[in-house]
Length: 264
Ligand SMILES: Nc1ncnc2c1ncn2[C@@H]1O[C@H](COP(=O)(O)OP(=O)(O)OP(=O)(O)O)[C@@H](O)[C@H]1O
Ligand SMILES: [Mg+2]
Image 1 (cartoon, rainbow, N blue to C red):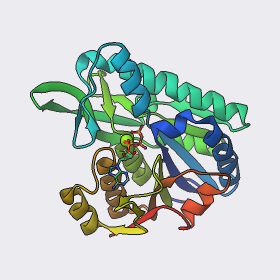
Image 2: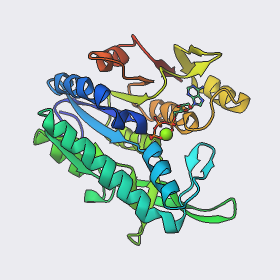
Image 3: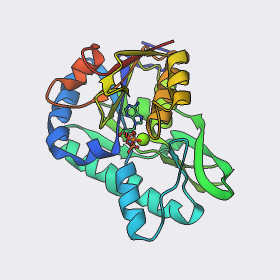
Image 4: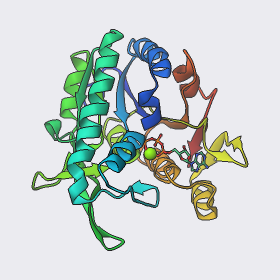
């Protein structure tokens, strides 16, 4: 038993927006998760960036990004929460339940699993985008030991109870550290970190810094690669970025057969 009272190791799997929408990929992914649950406690953290962009645009909001992070204005926060912690989270829970997985959906505010702190003013605009302020693992560990599969979205609240939107990669990193995760896997729409069209098999902390400065790592890959090295630094056993392709991909990613693996 570890310091959190868990008898199995936690594996944190972050799934990106486009993966959450593709039922052709989610079905075998659910089967892989079922296998994984025999020996581990999987935690799913999900994004939903593509859906937020689509619906926000329909409502007249122009998406803004700063160093790969979405800048959520106060007037957009309700919509972002509705999409990430409503539409996307419930879609995943319903889907996993229909596959026989004991999924439970929650956001950061539930059980105060993680709370946030906003970035303040970015490029002259007040924003509800933030960072993780604190993580409380108790609700997640209670769900694990009761046999559930937690499905965590990336919105939460600040000290006053006002909504905060946090990049899902950052949430996955912060929560996986608190849970002493064995592995943290980022599943996205690319087969790994790419350079000149090739997947980089492994990346060190210094190489990540260099490739960000060189512009090879850009956009949404910036918070992902940064979170990957931060997680390693804070004790997560292994971190992989890759793509889900077919039945068995989750195991292949965990065993180093696919994707980009990180080291310090
Ligand atoms: N060097 C790189 N290698 C691979 N992808 C890169 C690289 N640099 C930038 N990217 C971009 O990063 C994207 C992945 O991050 P993105 O934030 O879009 O998705 P996600 O994090 O999986 O989903 P969500 O944001 O919904 O959680 C890729 O689709 C690609 O366009
Ligand atoms: Mg992203």
